[in-house]
Length: 423
Image 1 (tube, rainbow, N blue to C red):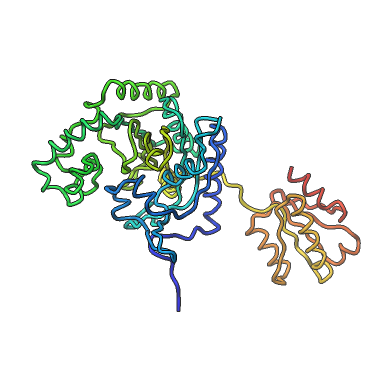
Image 2: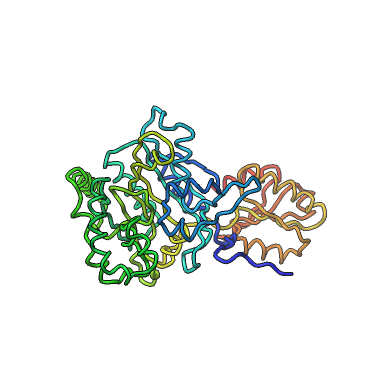
């Protein structure tokens, strides 16, 4: 019987893993500079957490969650997104009581959604995201957006478009909600079943419909920007001022609503304009979610954050033809000739590794020529050749694979010689 990988998942093989590690390290370094600390939450949570936070009118809850009953009869869901779990941890661990406010966190890990697999979209995918909890300052909205842009730009991406919008506060959204109902209700039967079910529950979600995005009613729908009260309008204007001061280019898109119910005030998406990137251009999305902490059982605490897909980031790099500056190859390959030399090579390779040098040797009893070919495939910077004759004289031959220069050095200074040569 043969086994195949489940649909919508992928094996990340050694040849690709280094790209992931590089991207992850760039993201970690940027978070460190912005003073965001890593948090790690479980891969599964109680289902009720996502029903309350993400919203029961969203595609995620209605169609995409991996939910099952455990042996104790509890409903468990593989996390479809990261914010709800971070906020749950924030509340459960009383991080709102920390003297360091706002609490600035980042996470990285697999998420799960039962979607139709396509380019850059998987059923198991990896998200990197940040959350800043505890501040109503529009400056931190701008900081979060700037951090997201810096991740992409640090990796070399240039064909990016940032769009922002305001979803307003509760008062603004209430007025906009009624305007949307009035706009759609006379012709709601022209739209899909999802839109029809959302008309009374959450009409703003109609604007996020993928099936009816080109319907004329979408283009003429009332703009949230026309219903912002004075406070919401001033907040949004301040976010734009800060972004401009930070040198972050953006466009205002009044139709941007985001796909999760917990957003209010600032909402944003970063897209790729690279030719041939694909129909789904969104790389990253986020915004402000005042009220989510209370919904999950905590005190009134404002929050703002974003999440981005590592898979889609890699696709954007490929679309722009960007190669990451990966450090490939090994430092030293030890070639052994003869049984005594082979035994000694085990000790030498171990000594190299303990000195912080990336080293390898032959484990298949190959001939010298085959060992040298193996060293070449591994892109070894140096090859050390040890035979029984050299062992008797307590010397070893070291070849610089870049220049071809070969040097005989005493065996007891072998490790220090290689270390110095590499530096």
